Length: 285
Image (cartoon, rainbow, N blue to C red; front, side):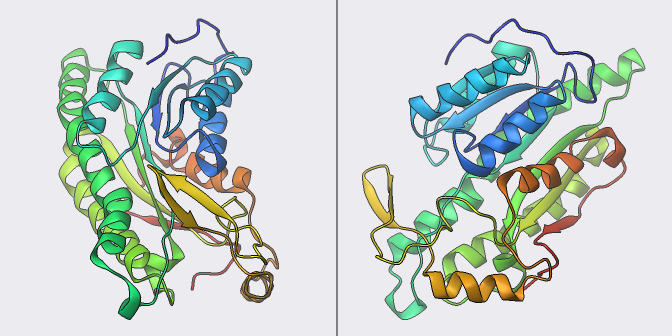
């Protein structure tokens, strides 16, 4: 954990709000953290590695907002409690949770072993479950205090899913199942947490340009996850074919993905809950 900066940003839509964003050292998560910070939010940044987490913290501070890092794997048993505690210790509470961290580990079902299945469900479904479970006592107590003070405050959860979770995707039985599960988790908590004045929604991404979806003709693009080297990237032919299916004719940018998440964090969406917003350029799979 690092000490939050003491910068300030002019009053914006998320001023004095605290956002927790998993997987925010890189890619879409980083863009989400910066978008929320640009609207005044304090941010708890998370990444597997300290260096990218520190870089995002510095970028948030450069915007005049405050940030603190919580480095570690979202799948570690103690991570959820540490993540929530970091937010409370640094900023006094929780207003926004974005469950973004994740990656793919693809194979057709007859070649997918239990480890491959369990690993992807752990990062995409069990980790958000644990984080939200750990946050519940804080959100409940904040709602109680708000009610006593006569100052009701709407707080937000945005869980990240995928069009693969809506329509499936060949070679991604584990990922599609996990992302479909995110929808069920979202809809259930929207019903359970309405009494706390918390909205719970999902953003399902289509094809977004990140290091996980970049063209990889040589098949040598890999990421290291806790010592496990996992191939990522998409063949140029498949990437071109996928873009042809998108009505807007291209993959989305990380900033566009972050904008969709922001829509469900902004006060204009205070009466939207239990919904799935597809950010896919018109492609819904």
